[in-house]
Image (cartoon, helix red, strand yellow):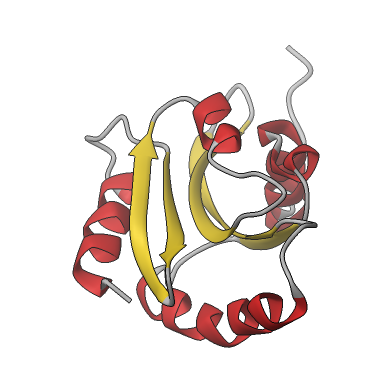
Amino acid sequence: MDKNAAYEAYEDVRSDSSETNWAVLKYDGNKIVLDSTGEDYTEFVDKFSDDDRGFGFLRIETGDELSKRKKFALVTFIGQGVGPLKKAKVSTDKAQVKDVFKSFAVEVLANEKSDLKVDKIKAEVVKAGGANYGTGC
């Protein structure tokens, strides 16, 4: 795994001074490499297909009218077209990814693009965070 590039992307997503909202790691042969980073969640979803396997790190803004917070999600994507041996490799390689992407509120396992929709992941982050209430304004 290219840990240096992955760590730089992780820090960029976590940085309050950066507009970067996500990072994607994918396989290049048997090696995990930084595929891309970006701001638009639609681009994040488009990075994956049924034949892909990889990892994503997302910044999600939560909170209510009085308190906005940034939370993070780790996404493991294994497309439905990925064979059993490659699927198994993802589960063992996830430990390397977690050595770099250390701080996150939720971990999401996705098998299709609909699992990657930002609203769905945000709901998981909010649910994990507790204290989910607003002022009604």
